[in-house]
Image (cartoon, rainbow, N blue to C red; front, top):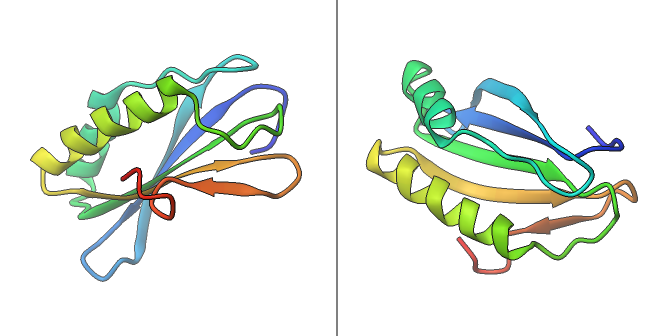
Length: 108
């Protein structure tokens, strides 16, 4: 997943927090990854998921989430919550194998 452009994937979990599927559809530019909330929520519904984890990379190596990262995460969390799908975490990963966890930092 580490590369020259940002990418976003969504991991879906069942009631036992077991992995049941993945959405790997979103590729962006060097510094942004637009994604479709409806596609993420719809896939979660189709899989009968009860949980999700979002992961995207920052090719620059900067772990700090942007304002857009935070705003998009809040929007996605709210939309998933309406369908009883809990967003457990949003991870930002870097080429240096470092990560930032929205859950660990209290943003979720």
